[in-house]
Length: 422
Image 1 (cartoon, rainbow, N blue to C red):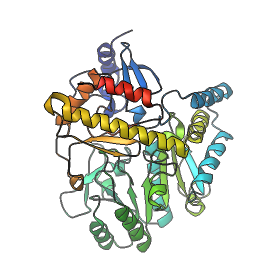
Image 2: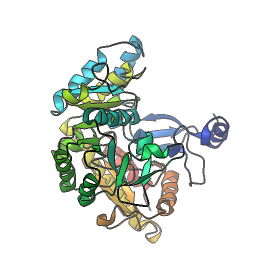
Image 3: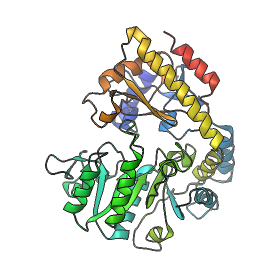
């Protein structure tokens, strides 16, 4: 078996940057990314046989742990029946009915193959329903690599925007209005500056892709109220938080009902998936009923639908309680390590957590969490490498959060304590 270094050298010749997603690249780490051979429970093993306690968990979907027996059995059964039909099948109906029954504000749902596709559909749906073009989004929220969401704040007036990726036309960015998080006054002003033009506000109700930026109940409710006042839709992007912070995601925890919600990750049990959900009135705008077009050859893939249902069926209140309890123990171990390692070498970092997510934050004062230092990798990258040496795997990027699963039980926590021993 080749080493990770050898595989990365081979990969760079045939794949841009050697990776299929930039966040896997170990950019700035001065080492080749680890090439993973297999996984189980809370563990990964690379091609050289080194084992790691995994806190990336495929960036969130593996809430029960890798290769959970219930999910594995469902996927195997689906595989034996056939793995793609390009036709209607009953398995997506089982998953859709299970979700709709448990989340009261959802009347209809459509599955696709990624969170990015779900966001793209939600934006088009909002524009088609409202007959308006402009979308408000926020710095610090990530909504996939849709052109209109790869936008940064412009240098001019509040709400102006510029592309943040090459290949995104300026014309696309003109209908995306960028605002700072946690500033309702700026949102109200934006509506006033663009009367009858704003189709929707899109937000991660728990921003978790540019750090873990916990928003207040009052702020999220304020967005809901402003959308109601200006006949705009509120879109909750719950690709990460959906089914992770609770079964109903942040919508359930806050009691705030969005007009449209996007899901991904957990609803596929680790297989590629995305979903858009809303009321029947809004969803009827989608083709073939309405004029808003969306399609996908592998949408509602039977493996993802079967594995996803098994994944969700295991998520009880006891499951969420156990994972949250483990998360607090894990966070405390990491906090002690930050304080004690090499006389507090990593004391500049704080740990922020919410339910089963945690983040090594460069900001101590949570009131200033939106003001991240320009180079937050400066403190995180050495920590990442130190933990990797100890057999602890985090997402290789300072902006990414850590994920805890049901498989991170007391036995794994005891193992973590040994690996973090000073």
